[in-house]
Length: 114
Length: 116
Image (cartoon, rainbow over all chains, first blue to last red; front, top):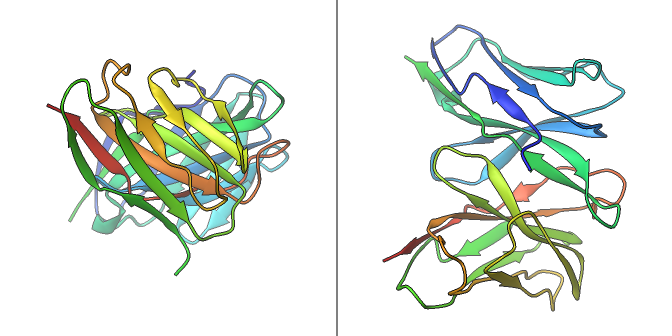
């Protein structure tokens, strides 16, 4: 099942600009997480926002969560060429036996041009 | 340094062969996971284990098998029953088993399997 869906699928911006990626999901969640993946590498956790939180900051990252609209956004300010990567949102959803596991969206490919 | 080690990084397999991908973690995490990633797509859960000697099927378990005999190890076998095994495989672990609240996942660097 695909819980989170990112938008846009691809985004190309100039260095110094801000990048905004969106994520929509379908079921109730306890938390939503954002990950980054450089080409051919593993994923790296960026930030986790709980369902009772509306906004969270970490360095140049700002994440918002709107549970009424079942959506989240990731803002990267003052982007750098090193921010070029794929960004995934992941939501925890209930599975059989009550354990909740993360379900990942298909990602946004961000390219930051120098 | 603490982390997750996957091996091999690249693996080639002939059709009809089983292959085993290794995943070892020294983070003392209880939960471990295997995901499959196809080009341009997100991750799909194959199997997960919340505790030693126990594991559950994920969304795409058919053609795969796992074992969890030790806390630090969670190997994945891709069997000949898996119809389209060429993919990028990612192993992850988390401190919390996910019974009430799924925490941060720590990922290995992945294993790329190609079937010839």
